[in-house]
Every structure is written in C-alpha cells, then in structure tokens.
Image (cartoon, rainbow, N blue to C red):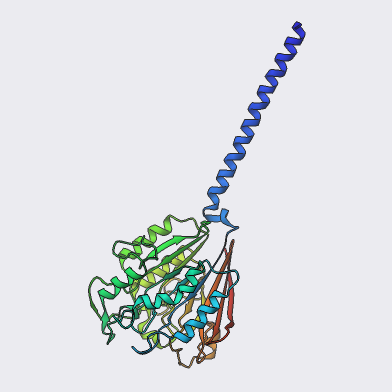
Length: 366
C-alpha cells in the first residue's frame, strides 16, 4: 500500500472514530431525555396524558335494625356503576354503610361488603372511609365502640395500611398508576377506647394531620383528592354539628387550600351539594376582622345519600342554587369523576330504583 493510501485510510479511520463517538453521545443524550420523561410521568406536569375514572358515593344506611341497608337503592346504583363505559378504576364509599355497622350476628360489615362482589369480580375495587354509624352500639347510638372499629379494619383490609400507627385501613393514601393523582382518606371518628357520644362533626387529631402533611409533601401529583365522611360546610339542619366548630377541621381545610386540593368529597348530610370554596368565602366570617378568605378553589362535593333517607329540610332557593343542592324525595345520588390530564370532569347522577339521570356537572382545570 502506498504512503498516500495509508494516510487516506488513517484519516478515514479517525473520522469514523470521531463519528462513532458523536453518535454515541447523541444516543446517550436521547436515552437520558427519555428517562427524564419517564420520571416526570410519575407525577407533576409531566403526567398530563394520564386518564382515570372513579365513582364516589356515601350513606347507604337504612333506618332500623330490621332494614340496616337500603338494598333496593344500593342494588340499583351498583347496577348503574357496573354499566359505566369505560368502567371505573375503583369505587370510593364515604361511610354510614348501614344503620349499625356491626350487628353480630344478624348484620356485619362483611354482608355490606358483599354487595360489591359483582364490581370486584369485574375488576373494580372498593375503597372505604368510615362513618359514625359504623361505630354505634347495636341498640343505641350512645357512643363509639372500639370493637366495631377493629372489626371494620379487619373486614376492609383491602384499604391501604399506610396510615399512622393504629389507623391501618382507616386513614390512608395512594397515588394513581401514572402518578398524576393523589388520594387521601381521613377518619374523623377514631377511638382508642369505647367513647361516649361525640360530636358528629368529627375531629382530626394531630397524628392524622402530621401524617397527611408528610404524605402530601412527598407527592408531585397534579391532582389531589380528600375523602372523609363529615362535611366542612353544612347545608342542612346538621349545622348544629358543624365541622367548622371544630378547629381541627378548619386547620385541615387551610392545609387543603394551601396545597390546592381539587376536591373535598364527603357525605353524612342526606342530600347532594356542590360548591367551589373560593375567595368570596372566609374561614370564619364571625370573627372581627374575618379570618382570611380561601384562595385556591377547593370544591366541597357533598354526596350524602345513596340509600339513607333524603333530607326533608326546606331550603331557600337562593341557597339551593348557590350550593347546587338536590334533596328531592325518594332521590339518591352517585358521582363519576373522570381525570384526563389536567382536566377533572365531575358528573353526578340522581334517581331511585330505576335508571339514573345527570343532575350536576362541572370541571376543574389544573
């Protein structure tokens, strides 16, 4: 081989080596970018393509030991949920399952849980939040029983167990598979021993509040939802038990507002109501001067009967419109929530034992 050819070959070889190195750098950079994208998809703004559907309902109880659950209504609603397309990823139930939650041996938590067998068999799991009726004595509502709470924890062991010590399956959180939605459940009626009658508005103790703050600090989810039995803003004559009278609930709402939660989903009052808590509403308008107004538009969705006797209170029409209230006789409700990227669409349905129709719809945009 001539010297000229050797020089030409060496130059080509060097150029090929440089080209290969440059190609390696470009490919590595592309892979790094893909990894970053996948990491972003686990939460925050990078998870904007995640879609998810779930159902929210509460208060299926009957009014006597002989009829602890409103079975005709619950059966109709479960059939409505089973027919949804696309099917929900899960169902959330917000407490007051039956007139007495644990009536051994005539009625148990297991009997109520079995109502959802058809949904579970269709791949739709059930999550629950505890209500006050779950804890009542068989023959009286004089207080809350520890044995009921423990039995509830045993039966609803499918709820996550990542709550504070002692709160397993009562208070818990989880995040959607794509990381874009964060879900938290609280227990406002937690007891460490049998307890005389407590305020129905409930209370969030320091253990739960500290734990919730730590859980929220760890998430980068775009959407955040809280599920709890008791409302913060009461619309019906339950106002004598108002959660706003308990400072722990005000501290909770302050935290939800500061962290821009999408939804505060509750039950307890036997009606439907939906209100965006915006800067026109003060935390406590009775103080002088009033406490600061809320800033971040957390929605209170009160869906308080899927079987419990609807509230018969006469409601001022202005209030009815402002708070999107429905309490028609023999009418019960469930809510379907669809998350599509940054948009949450919430549709609520009302009916009796037949088909249910749309009664309320709104969207949350993040």
